[in-house]
Length: 84
Length: 84
Image (cartoon, rainbow over the protein chains, first blue to last red):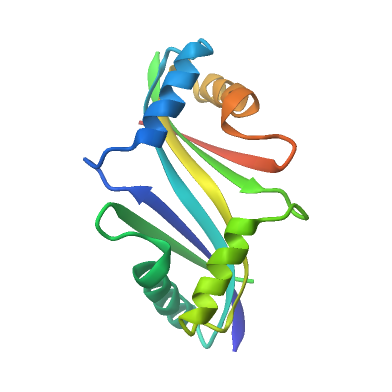
């Protein structure tokens, strides 16, 4: 059993409305950052998991995303697994 | 002027309470993922910015984080800049 650090990047899917991103963009424009565009706001979830291998940790993290961390209808995710 | 894609990873600082992370951890345990620990939930903000160089894009993004995207009291951030 080894300890792995998992990073799940969860972003709204392309084409899905992102009101948080729109509101950040307006805020940035108001502050004068007018060369900014296409703001998307997602979640970054970091955790540790004990597993037999990096592949096993990845499989567990995938299940976690599918069951709890991400909403598969509107979000997509990417996982990074590294040994702790 | 080139277009750059900036990724800002904004996480609660070490030592700062992370109620969202705690609640995700309880949810995971309830679902049977009992080898998980140290969950931290942060924000991932992706955007495009027009700038003269990657360094200039980085400087602009730093200013954006300091002024709007991150709360320097409780959050720390890391920036990744890539040419679009």
